[in-house]
Image 1: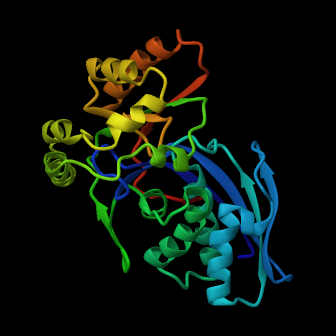
Image 2: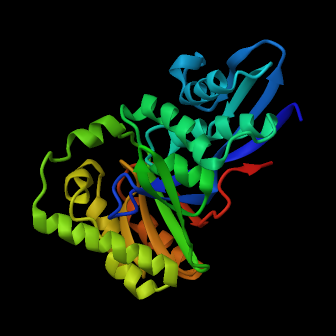
Image 3: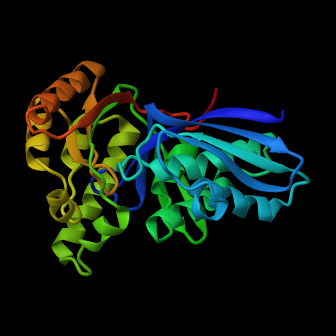
Length: 306
């Protein structure tokens, strides 16, 4: 195989209480990428459609992650990368992660799968660092492993796959504004109260248990963020109205996706997820801000070959 076309999915990171460690993968939103072998050695980004992003390998997250992997494996060929970008940069649903994870996934396939998924995640993190200014794995892990993932450790890297209840759906609103991850990190406090930390730990543990047991009632009681949301929600226009209307429509929980501005809601069943979608639409359609709304089953596969 000399060429491969893939779907690199959008992802939700943090998942309310799991700041920088929890993530899940979406099924209906994502980029497409075409990667082909070339006789010219090196990594070359030859096309990017829909958004004005750098073609220079060292300045593009897909190029940085691919180049790190390329230099480690030293294959006797090169690779050209085309990116058909459908996830807006700065959207909070893993735009950079899709590119960073997609390039290493595809190159690994073209080379006959010499690396496992954890090793691919290590290289994808290097691309994410270009966008985020620090090493984070919650989005790229979800994209590569699929479903729900927990970043147990960055050094050494350890990713845990968490079961996904069969009837769990996500509703995502993406207001058409940009919030850079660096800016959203800057609003976070350096210190937190011990009582808040204890509450957050309890929520993370109970959320993981609810996913293992498909306990939607426990999930509803666990999808709360007492540390990050109070600070970042001020960056998202009409956040409180989005959340109130989503919960009133039956959402199990609503919180900020990644660093924002996207906001996710989890629901039991597609019917409820669509009711949540309508409730959010009723709020935002009157606010004068362009937005996208998506309903998606949790993608248990991750990146897909097209």
